[in-house]
Image: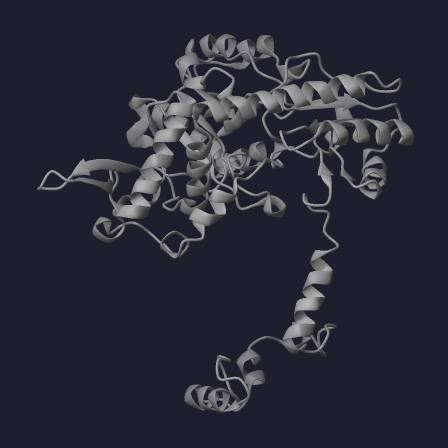
Length: 450
């Protein structure tokens, strides 16, 4: 044995085979017909030394178009935002990144306090009364909100705008199928929800109306106009939002929302090639006992000392099968901590400043692209940090993005993938990370290719 830390030696292997009464590893698969088993050896390289392996992995990583070497104008749910260095410093502490579950409050006070602070920040940001300890991601939170609405109203219809993120709508449909819910989608006009169609399709059978603002196209929905349509039939009003935009926009809770959900990725969580992220979920007082996931509460011990505990729900409620509020009994605690540190580091003024930078830079980019001879903005509705651009007829967004990649630019999202009627339209995200020079280069590269 050359390396003592390796988990298994040939002697270990022989002893295990002897213990279970077989002579070879091949016998473990005896019950699987040979006709369906892989024959031969896998076409992979042989073992490498540690230095050779590190070089090989670095070479592979170097093929990625990452945010450090490329200017990214790709959003559509995952964004390139500045991540303060203090975040990684805090979450790298072993007491946070090794923490499993805070069911024993006497040994979990640090983790419970961190979660409590996350909940408090989310409530202040969204204007809601209660928030949970986080969900797996934004789409999961949206689907769980629909399930809560159905359980609370005893209705089976969920009405959702087509301007809600396509992936979130897919998750909603998957969840709805298991709960025997009907999902009705509402079309869009000028990049926002068609309120006339919404009014026509919302009925006494509707459990919830779900909109996203800023929506998938980056446009800002008129939540004040949607609220009476939802509540006119005693349906719940669910709003999905970009939390960073709430540094500038009115909190959905103050506009009549019953449930506010979203993805906390813009709040100091790295893109990480698509995840994991952290979903937030906040409700009005009336629905707190129906909220899925964990909730951390503040209390005092018998000596009057402040402490934190999981509250309103016992662990056993999560195994109550069909009677449980949800089958989700965990949370993204480490990523929720990222968001907490981010909001704490920036403070109220910092959140406002970053939101303004996103708004201003996106509008500057939109004007630059709109000035090109062959492009125009797809929609005229107000937008936050994301907007759609209509390219000349016949333009392949995929080919354009390949060209931009060669220029050191990660291009926008092809809206034709999810919206056939928007083929040839590109969704472009501009965050505080983009400099004036990068925006000018993007516009010049686009014009050159066209």
